[in-house]
Image (tube, rainbow, N blue to C red):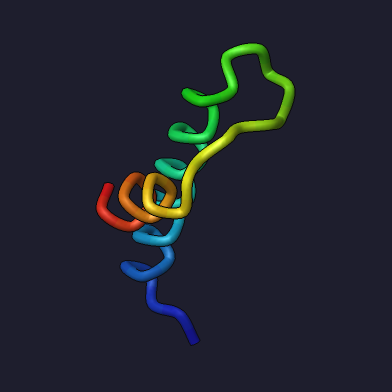
Length: 46
């Protein structure tokens, strides 16, 4: 069972990941290019 706090944390992290992806996809093509290092840095540490 997931706690409410963990649920909120997951939702916030997912929102952040989506926002970062959209920054790299200004033409709304559903395509963005990241190096592995960039992706980890921007999603894990944001």
